[in-house]
Image: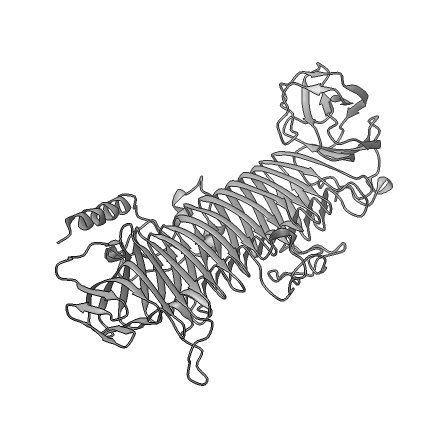
Length: 627
């Protein structure tokens, strides 16, 4: 018995089990609205699946991992040895050799090593039988089919032996019966397939897929380098990844895919850890139902990235794509995508982690909702930054740059074709657009810091905007036709800090039904990017200050420190002692060298004034104004 291998396995199992804690499963919609600060377990709720064998599974993960899935140990003395070669040899029971095909036909443990230059390893055991397959320096090429073909068994657990390098390759053409399309992968399984261990596996999918299971595909650990014409890693019912290092490259398919569309409880992808470098011809990771991620390190590129041209607009080149709910709980994700970076046909919830995006289309899109509870989200390049029917900012740090709308509830210009892959879908509701409000579309800011830099509308809602807390900083358009704030219903503010700079011809203040004081200032001429704007009270104390990052002629200010019936001095230029990177000025700053423009006295909750402090009608200055 190899005690070294047994002890290594027990160490892995105890480490994983020690990190586990109980969790309660909730619905995808609950996850989208659950705040990490309110309920930390909401970050790791099991949206992916439920398990009937809870006593054998590990908690606190999105995927379902049984204890046997982690077990890399085996009894070397009793295991059957298979040595591949020109004349393959079997030492022990349960396997046969015919020409260049080695077939495992009985339950048990099999240690495989050696090289097949044009052959195949087949597993075909009883439906209730399990096989533990140890790959210990395997190199198999099959020019006419899968290198490893698992035909039948309850579950096949494959272990990549320590320090082993294993290579699988197929040919560009398979010998299939007329009308047959499968098998279609270099490592192909009709049954549940688990891969664990600390060795490496290199797979060349020259025909179609790299690694594929028609049931559940579970990857625990190991180092993987997979190239494929179609999908690199594919599980029909599910893909669950606990850890490991993955370099995945595809020509025309997805990096990771689960595609069961017949069963709502299947078709999910659960990522619970690991390091990923994915370069895909289409989607980087695509789940037919839910996609849940935590503790992962990912660098993803689809097509040629954000600058892709001449692509089929009917294709899909998204980064993280879910047919149901998409949840990111923790980890680090860098996405460079031709299509939407994060996309869900239902809801998107960001509960933590760091996400960096450059995309040729939407940064984050949810047909129903997008919720950011915690985490850092930086969208450095996008057509539209964040888009959904309902958008919630509850915490975290969000920075959006967009060539059209920065934040868009309800579509807006999503039907335009410029740089996009077809029109996006949204939840049902009124048509919106124009001056007609659709109450099913709204943006709610209750926490966090949200920065927007947009060439279109900065923050655009076909319905309403609600702000009860947090910080919203908008550097809007510098030319006409769009505004820093645009809404068809109302913008009701009762808390938080709002600074919205942009052009004056389409400027909008918040609604007069708000309870927090706001002022919309129209400047006589354009102010240059980087110009400090301050409001100070009669004692010289700074009440509000902002340094817009783009040229502006209009600035909306609303903070808890802004009050009515108090004379405020408006000044521009100079310097402040404490200016954050986002342009917000601390109220205990010292300001020097500013030029006074006028004195403002705010006589109502919502005021519109020129730079001298004279009340103006927003409709006379442009097309916006309070509503």
